Amino acid sequence: MKGPLFYSKILLFGEYGIIKDSKGLSIPYNFYNGALKVDENPSEEAVKSNASLKRFVAYLKDLQNEQPELVTFNLEVLKSDVERGMYFDSSIPQGYGVGSSGALVAAIYDKYANNKITVLENLTREKLLQLKAIFSQMESFFHGKSSGLDPLNSYLSLPILINSKDNIEPAGIPSQSTEGKGAVFLIDSGIVGETAPMVNIFMENLKKEGFRKMLKSQFIKYTDACVENFLHGDMKSLFENTKKLSKVVLNNFKPMIPEQFHQVWQKGIDTNDYYLKLCGSGGGGYILGFTQDLEKAKQSLKDYKLEVVYQF
Image (tube, rainbow, N blue to C red; front, side, top):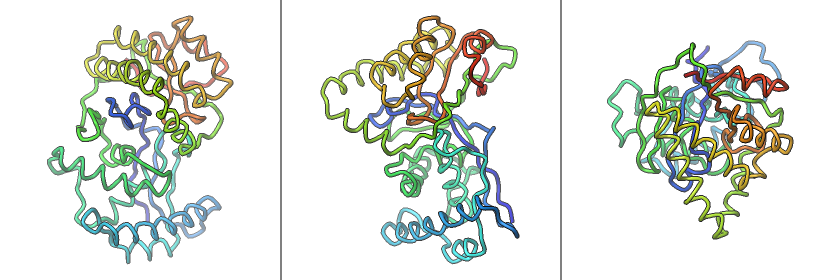
């Protein structure tokens, strides 16, 4: 048995901001994917994944009992598949901010949810919000409070524009140009990031008035502007605002940036060769980069391997 593939995602803009209602823009990233599988001779990884699925099934049973109006599953079939050794076969790195648990949640919903909302029907805003609410509850099993956006992106395989908590829509993004010099890329920090501790630091900071002010007057302002610039293909403004955003993050989100990247981050701002930002909650995993000249950025970051996500 092998189920359909579900892809990883990248939140281009909106990390942390969407907790406080900034705009956000999330795109599928087809380089990594995962699928549900059963093997005759499971590997060590598969056995680990299967054990985690067993705990997830128990969680989904509780969820269904507590909120039957939200979502119900064909638990009998799910249970027997898990007992047969089903696991999530995934190339998506965990703790890297590209949505490993999101793809798994999407795969389970797709195969086992009753009365599921499908990609083929007319996706009204109500349906999108309902899916997001279901995914939010399902994904909370993996890392505490979840917005439900990662599984939504993975499930629909569409770019998603977050206008606010209650207003999300599929988005058309400018088509890629492989001839273009501009690019969005990933750098591997070489460290696995844990989502929960990073979110806790952010929540603690929110108790400080100065931090809340900065969030509203700078962080959210530039995030919203970047989303608008990107969607409208206004690359000149996009880079001006990404630079401002990169500065604000370096000054106010230091704990989320691995220490060995503080200087690299500053270098980008000083040289304008590239601008870095958090990918997901930070603390490790990938770091997202934006550049107007990919060759220049590669030269400037020659000690690191860049993975190009999007070219324009």
